[in-house]
Image 1 (spheres, rainbow, N blue to C red):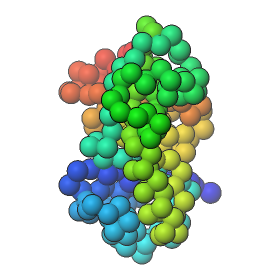
Image 2 (image 1 turned 90 degrees about the horizontal axis):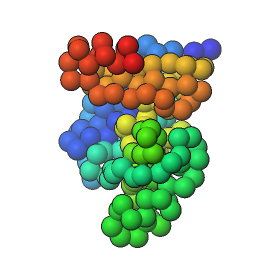
Image 3 (image 1 turned 90 degrees about the vertical axis):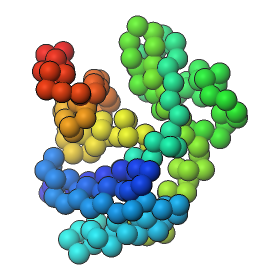
Image 4 (image 1 turned 45 degrees about the vertical axis):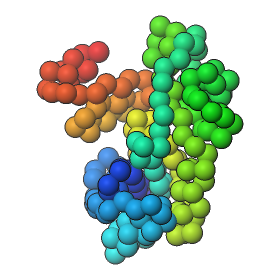
Length: 193
């Protein structure tokens, strides 16, 4: 049976939702973004429900305005180990109380890692909004990290995704390569990497 994955990407002015089934795009819808995540998500599901009743996974990319990013020096290359230590390692990177933040990291090599942080309250609000609509989210976080999650939900093993602005490769559900694309030359360079 084909996996059907709903990807909801929240932006500042709009929310784009795309339904994938075995890496083929099956449907997409764009709705205006609002201050209330539940009202915005309701519009997405109203547009999709005539064709889709359920999803194997629901992945939500938070709006960029809710994500803070930075780079830390840390000699950890394993993503799972990195994620387990981020609250401690990144405490000096973000002003304020880091206990109210959720962290995700991406090893960059050479003893450095990219760290994304978002408020726990923002994630809880989206979980509550989706559950109120009868949907259990599989993952909520920064768009940069969602691509490896999407690949993991749709494939087994190794896969790559080119979305027009970046190329992402994953192995066993973990991101192993990410590069933004400015033009066709960048894509050629990424494919040879």
